[in-house]
Image (cartoon, rainbow, N blue to C red; front, side):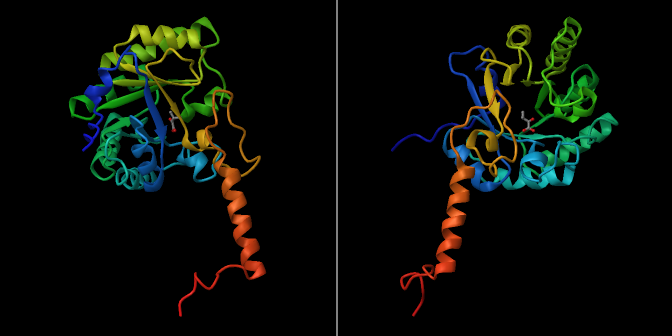
Length: 273
Ligand code: KIV
């Protein structure tokens, strides 16, 4: 009998820093896709606050609440066996005070069954990261294009264009790693900057729009699966589509509606005597 693949842990992820095999991360928001991602062997499943944009139809992640993150994390946790499960701390669940962040992270772990939490920022959240790690909560940081600051950036734009910006992002990544974050997401920056950060910190780096040098990659599942209504949302340049589920789903819905209208569904075999 084939041996069951072993559980992915923060320790096994850390051990893959600069390793030959990169770490594969995907987002999920419900039990169906969580099961599919886990069975496909993804290393990490992230319940991202991108839920606001891809599941709730919002134009940013800002409206997502802690209750919503707890709910989505709990239902994803029922589908994840092997992968490591990370949940995002949503906007304003941790920025106002360290205590807020501790309690919010506690809810994601206790009620959501997350195995680690992710937060955005660097120097500004280092004290919170230190406290969380001290309380036994593993932390994933997030630097570069941090979507919760979209209004400060003036849009979802490439970060790290100037020397000042690059220095600040490196400083943020170092602060996160020094505070004990075991992983850092690096989003939408020039690839040379991701190379620099990946070399500079002991934490594993997970890139999204940050080139190939990171220790792993993450994509939003709707982007990689093409799970959008046609023309609804233009995927960023760094997305690679591995399926066109939006088109397949649209065609299936249309075929079903056509069959119902023409009396072809249900058939005799699909009916009870
Ligand atoms: O919310 C999210 O899905 C994320 C990933 C894009 C890294 O933060």
